Image 1 (cartoon, helix red, strand yellow):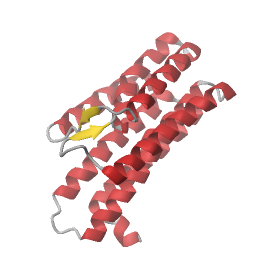
Image 2: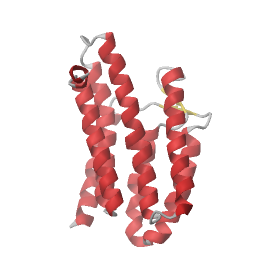
Image 3: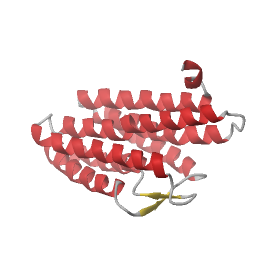
Image 4: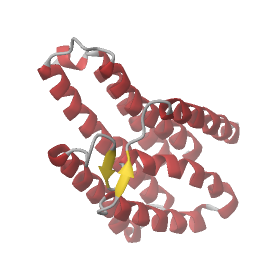
Length: 201
């Protein structure tokens, strides 16, 4: 098992899982800028593992299959569990926020299960909004948290996550971004890391 985990793309995937774990930790502690930094870099590493894999033509069928399963399971943690914990934490773990957290989790696992079975609509099109896009949008949205205050922002986040969950499983076609978009995502993560890092000082 560990020999598969040591494959270079899978190391990138596991580094993304480490970021997601940090995101959960900081969300529970209420340190939301740090949680967002961790989540944004989880997205970067999620994109990076595929790029690394494509540059390794000698990978076996078993390595590729293991990597695909690992990536999908880590996506559940990074883009479903961590946002759900963020929502619960901002809602001060009120029971009213549990249904919202469940919807985020359910939409995530349904979407990933569907993708694992049916794949892309074509070579560059998803059915439904990809889960990593949720985090990219939340990255901007969380900039409003200091201005709105935790209570008001928690309600806004609740509403936003419900809309995103609906889009994740909606029968709509969305583009699969790749290529140079990777560098745009890295730049986006770097800029927001700087802003959120400043908020932490």
